[in-house]
Image (tube, rainbow, N blue to C red; front, side, top):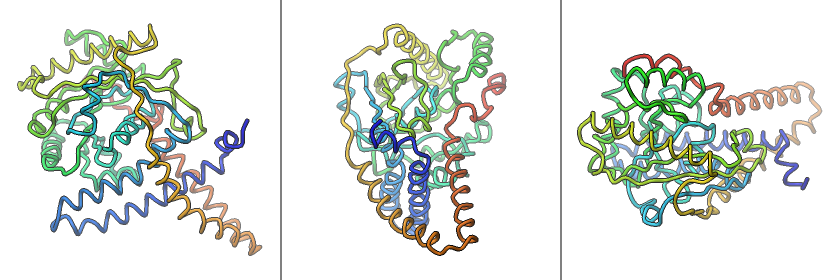
Length: 376
């Protein structure tokens, strides 16, 4: 085992990475708070600044995937589709099967220059998660309670705000509403059978309300829908902890572009279009499991140095005073001071672990276990 490989497995190194992410995130959130004064004066300047501030935080996670674990991401698509990347507003539909599916999506956003302006329809609970939710708030992310009667007006208002956004937006939709688990899948397919819909093997029954509303509200702004089907070679089930330990994964993403004018205007017809799309996604996953590849040409967009340079900037800025402080604590010889410091380290470790826990499937929400039985 080489020195770098050894360091990737060490808890103290993980703690230092977590320290840089958390402290830099708090600094970024504080700056974002200050930018609120710009909103009534120059809304577009506020948005551009917050896109770059968000990039400075999210790119640290992308750095872990690209440079720390050296995970490779391969696109299966065509040259015409790749030519549109980063040059238009789009809605992205992604399967929600893996703990790091969002991170693979962010990697592609970063490589095509839209990481800071990427959006998502997020569950409202995430608004209260430090750093993640707070950053999203300043980015005008659309939050929902996943109860359509309560969400409808807020979702429509949030989507319409994006009509004059100054940066290209990639708006992510997890149409399944929650991460795939066997229990949720079983309940979901019971609902599909009761509605006369085809059974899906690798996906949950898609929720159509959010999709049809997004398409209706964003017509005239969004140029296309990108359908992204993600899987990992070797039947791997990667985790954020695995990334932190430097484990290398190979992600494959099949990307299909559908111009928005191809999606029906009628809500019921658009819902049927989405159900058909998920049947196609299921067929793509079946092909991948049998052949190990998706259809289409293979593209490997090169990773850019900015994520690494951004992390090195924050690490240099924050770790130098931290090391000086730690040396001072132990040089003081004060048992109380040393114990207080060790207690702080323990609390920080717990906090970082809780942040990672947000991505873990087994700690995901119970949404979908019974909710599928309720009428959309």
